[in-house]
Length: 380
Image (tube, rainbow, N blue to C red; front, side, top):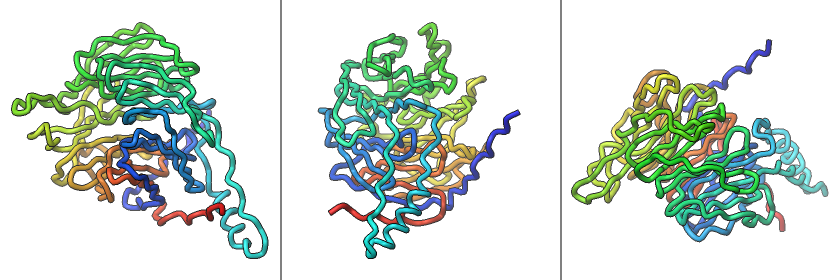
């Protein structure tokens, strides 16, 4: 009988900034690629920026004509082990120490191939070769009428799902972008979606906090779950505010989480409190996760750490990352970050997390308790 590896122990107090990647415009979203080699961030100049965690190199993906936030990856082997950079970093450091003796610095290992799919405000999806040295759009699909808010890839890498302001969830062939099916039933803008790890179901959440559980074999919604605490109609501004700003499944599929804003007192200014809601998959029972201390703002990203904790990131007057453990609905630890966090990314092994900063900087943290990674020498 195979014995599963032990879960990594998470001590949130050891979180330290490992790298800072600066861009000229505010960032909107961030994601680690499947191997953990790169951090991708979308920006308000319509670009997608790729940051190499080994070398520090930045590469721009240019092709969108509006802001993009949704990002997802298609990898040849979705279950491939995450990058282990320690051996190369040690060899690189040793080579650097001998440069004065005529020894050249070691080249970085070649990245594993993967495809990146991004979604923008004009309703378009773009396919890219994510590891390319000179990335260009491979395919552009007019997916939604209005903002395409989120995109996800099925666990087997065969299907891309997208959602948007046209109240629809759409499925596409990951290989070539061919349309497969449209899932209809939402009555307001669809803000986010995620595949269940078993690949047979998908959940989506709309502006009004309605979460639909879709059976991908039948294309029908099997149940609605209630996340209406993440939405409000403001009669003063005659506007709705809400929706799932972030969504994530637990790796074993036993739970998923959505996050956003609650207790809204001013829809125009986005005044309210950050909140995450977790759902037990089997029962559909919901549990609210709140910051322990009073904070005004929005939670833009949520993730399940393999060590058992839930992470959330957001901002208002300042940026925060919250950690919840066990059954306590109040956060066990809070980390003040240098900018409003407009998204949260967690590496697959749980060793790192990143935030997309409103100040144009992507901050990468690790849980090793150590400071910045030494910068590699730049080519002359």
